[in-house]
Length: 189
Image: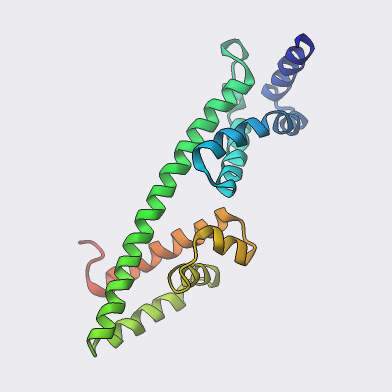
């Protein structure tokens, strides 16, 4: 146990000193702990992997704030993991709300399109706005709304990382909401 403790202290000193090789050793030693903490709260393997990477990136960037006299490096990393996990949960909530709002707008327009002849114009407007999105954003939104796939399913289908799928969805939804809001005169309402 004492030999392990000395090794942790030496690793912490090398890490705080900016030794890049220590980051890889730190990841090997504490990556499973960080991943387990994130997995427990997020219940999503892909998100837990994203959080784990974010924790070690944040730790590396903030290594000058690590103080060994205040506690173990593993405890410091666990604190970062808790904050990054909370951020991921908040982002998940925001994405869900944004997707529901955009889905509601699209569903309303689609329902109107079926009920009203002039709603055909709305279908054309939505299709035109979708066409203006980047190919990845358009693909993610079509798979999500027309094929009713989850972001995890889209990541599996496309082979893109889950974080990339989420980014494309969020940016695409923001752009659609902005463009469709301007079209209807509700962008600043």
